[in-house]
Length: 300
Image 1 (tube, helix red, strand yellow):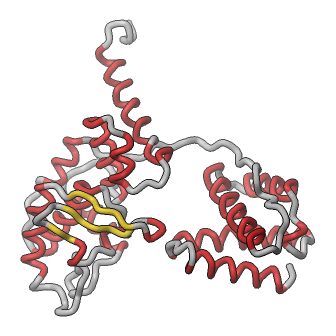
Image 2: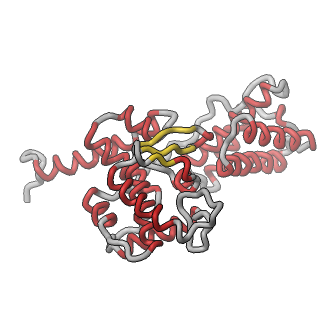
Image 3: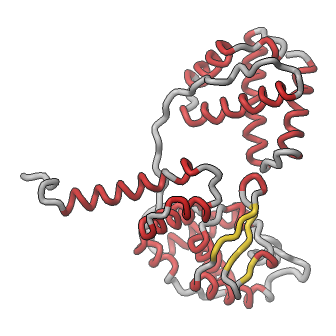
């Protein structure tokens, strides 16, 4: 493609970072998706973004699928293209958005994995024996109590916690701030950790969770510690931090039936994202029905 086409990509990335204030991970995903389109254009002989039409984008999506990209990934890729072309329209470089109304192939919807209530109790009932295990228990209690994302937890500062009121201020996706409740068990675990933290944290360290070197605990370290604690508790499956968020939402929805409330607590911009947990809830109810209803039981 022409050098000017690359200039537009750079301007678009600056727009995403400064005006849209998207996360580093989201920016990286946009960069990959647009690089894939640019490479396809180079192979096809398309020199400028204005030359692309609706059929080109459909062909690009079909080629992506033929190369093994799943429907959900193609949906994300098309969303990135629509945003990029919308930006070019706004800047007067395009008259139409060629990615509008291009559909990705349907993908199998995978339900999120969760721990049930008994498994969560088994995990969180393990008694800590040192400061690092006290920290691990506190972060797991907070994950489950407040439904935090991994990046939200690792980004927490001491000023974000208000244990007297029982709440935490988090910075979610798109730099959107929300207040999440903190339950009594998490407050107790956090108070114990904050007392132990003084012997580990560097004097000027503001992060709530720190490692043995006194520095802020990173995402990979949290993943490893959570997995290790699950093994130590005897849980059969691999545990990753996001399973706490899934479990938080599922257990809350099972008890409250308040989908809008769960949406607010999770910080979802669109309720359709939250609705996946209604499928989990129905799956549980369906299993209960199959086991208990006299007309549902299979007869030998």
